Length: 133
Image (tube, rainbow, N blue to C red; front, side):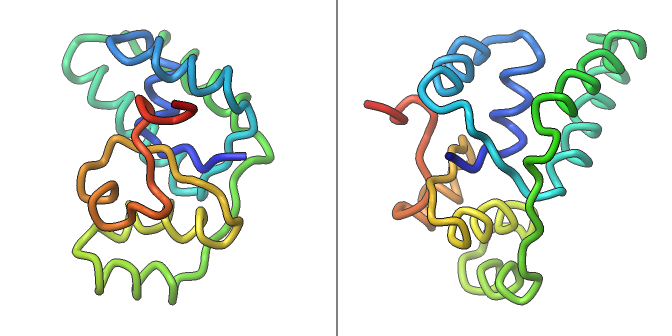
C-alpha cells in the first residue's frame, strides 16, 4: 500500500508526460490510498485543463469517472489536529500535509512530486522515480 497524492493520480488518469512513471508505480503497488481531499484537487486539475482548452467537458467527465473508479473505497480521513501540526512545523501546505498525515497514520510511503514534501518528510515521501528503485 502507498499513499498516492493528487499529482500521481492525475498522471495516471490524464495521459501526459508522466503517465508512464505513474503506470510503473501502479505496476509495483496497485493498492493506492489518499485523503478525501484528492477528489477536489483532481476536479481542479480537470477544471484547469478545460479552461486552458486542453480538454472538453465531456472528456474531463470521463477522466473524473475513471479516477473515482480507481480510488473508490480508498479515501481515508485524517486527523485535522495532525494536519495542522504538520503544516505549522514544516512550512508545507495543509493540503500537502493531509497526504503526509495519512502516510503516517497507515505506516506507508507517500509517493509525490511535491518538492517541499520530499524535503520536509524524507522518511515518508518518495518521488515516483525512486519508488521501487
